[in-house]
Image (cartoon, rainbow, N blue to C red; front, side, top):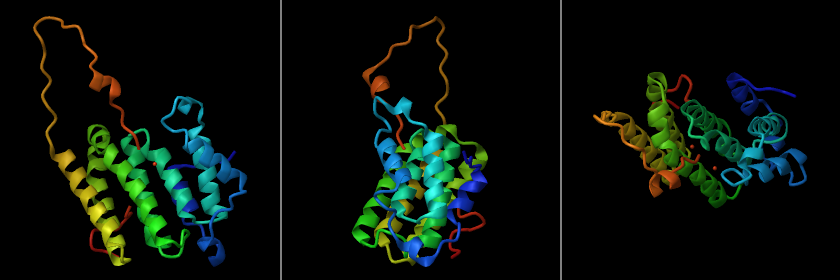
Length: 221
């Protein structure tokens, strides 16, 4: 089984393919694609624990490296990184999205721009949902890196003629900046032990995540 290190994610995403493969949709009969779709659709469900996330990621990266730059594959790959709210994985997701938009956005499938925008908005929404988790769990280095990724993403979409997506990425930039600048509430220590109470909000809350400028700065194309 092929294992992927973080650096390998970018090598797989950016692996050279013939032009016809770059722009074509992954085949609906492709066994890897069928398995990816089936498993990603169960993220967050009662059967979530049965999903081999590492294997789904490997399969998605294999498709991107060898078969197609289909944006749907990228969306599913990013969802596996966004779902858990892990800061390191969220930052990796942002970096991968930036690289994809920079290199393949215009030519990759889907050709229908409405569909492409809708898929991108799904990715953006999951970044919105995960902002709080990122703020709480990110290191200083990760805190400093994320805004640059989102700023460059907004510029790329703006330069490519997608003002709606550019505005959404700008809003993400503002959201992550705001969450990271808010001070952490001080811990209040009670004089006497108090039994913890689970509220409906505690039970209902969960952070979901279904958008690098490595070396790039805002304003650089």
